Image (cartoon, rainbow, N blue to C red; front, side, top):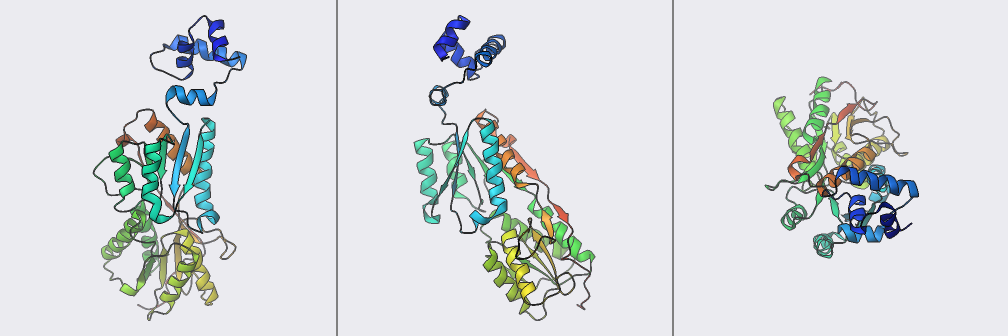
Length: 338
């Protein structure tokens, strides 16, 4: 049955039936319920192309992403994407990922917005100063940021409490007698890395502890750089007695470096990694600053974006989830003298 036949059967105009099916507010509740019940009874489904034209939407959400080689093997990234896809499928919508080279990322946003190819965007790997978010805010284009940035314009964002997570890790190590604690960070132009480092510095200062500059290593965002960072720390004299790694990809490399060096992890050096580390290279019993299941995060961001498209103000769509510290075998009591 097509729309015309359904309208005739109901004794209504095609316009009224179409508006009822598409949730227009000017159609009263009883009429909408009658139309929806009749459509369900006869198995009517709107033509998706026609519906998109009627409501002025593509029913597509996009991610513009400068993919790194490690992303396609990153279970956390793939989990977030899976959660987004599942949430959109439930709404009969689609997700597209547009991989771009880093230098072409900003023009790609402008091209996507001007062409109205998607209804909204999810912006990942937010920067401390993020021109993508500034541009989308100026253009009035719907988006949800996966992470925060410094912006005076209210925008919708989903993030984890980076400050609280690092504080949990530092306090755990301090409670076990560690004082020479190192931090391995992702590039500090990434907002999460900057927030986590700032929290680390504050937490150490609050404990009255000075940080050896050699124990602060930046620009690690994959296994290789995490491995190299840990090698640098092992070459220090004195070595740190504990290390916090602020991202799970670098964490795999850092733990592998300790294993290759014959370090008894949890006794000689303690390690805490932000994010789940389940890898055949290192095992899975690493002490972690844990985030909720990635699929839940992906679904939550889609829920927020759909609310934004429905008219909810961006300032009411700002969600901060709390991490927790999951114990493993990689943390133990400090046995070394300061």
